[in-house]
Image 1 (cartoon, rainbow, N blue to C red):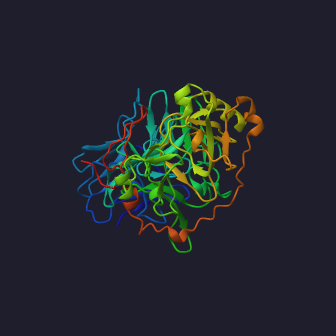
Image 2: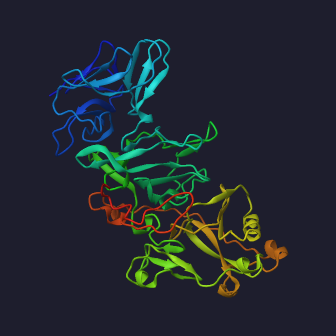
Length: 474
């Protein structure tokens, strides 16, 4: 049994010897050594005071100690280091310190470890810039589109091995920022675009009680996604099966309540229905081709393998004549919009239609009051139908495929009539009451993350093997 030192700081006069710990100012987090369940290896990390089994950050994820001889101290060069019983460095903050300085490392009430220059107060290094598998309030996902450097969280290998696993979660800021879960770099789940208020492909975020998230790009080209900080203990953990799980601390029950997770069902898995296929978790089968499309491989489709997607039955008039006349747009309400949206800032849905009409490569468009226009010129991938929230998606169809009696059809035979004839039915905001009973962290397993992705795109390369099966790829 170790001692909890009455300090939140490691400096030249204070070290941590296994199994001792230090504790943050308001006693929210401890910094010290631990052993995962079903393991004998020792690790140095940050864990909650109220739940010491809940570890949010680990220093030596892939370099465990095999005994209890570990010590954490400030080295001669000013870095925070973990050494074993033979004084061999197992882990270091490895910050570049140009001249000797007096440094200290503090565990904060946010769970962040900050290495300071004592004389100036300048931050030299912080653990939130090198996260493990947990995304914490005030932590930031980063995507620098200029340097292509990201700050992401990465899963454990297994429930007893905190080594870096195959799943990562982070921000992708191409065109419109989105959050992804990747398996070895290949998409497994996608949040949909950030509109300045919510991630529009996450149906639970339409609730007015879900706020405080933010994205900023200051400096330009460097995007940050931050979770809100509140009075309740909360985190997002990426588990070894590839599920991103949000939990809240229940102080009465002294345990963690699951408030949200992704993916929740098979339709949440990236590209379950393939190109031009739409997924609806409330229908059976869950996949269907968009109107005017048919299965690319009908035999596979009928067997329940939808990953090859769908293809057009008839060529667009625009492709044949070089003009938009003869094509029209069909409105699909309550949709999670496809991946690879191209963005144009506009406050009017009519301009979205006009711009898409003028461009024969424009296959679909959508409008969000915060984002403006979104256009798609390649395969429509990762489409999902929601029941009462989402975005109106307008897909381009050949004239003969349009049902002119359908009020959701917009015909564009005469360009001058576009603005006069356009009628957009705006979605009413509805509360999305989250039914916790249908989500069980213990029962949820990676069967919802089995998927094959086919097709190609210049921005990403997809493997034809299962990318979201929760296993470690060799």
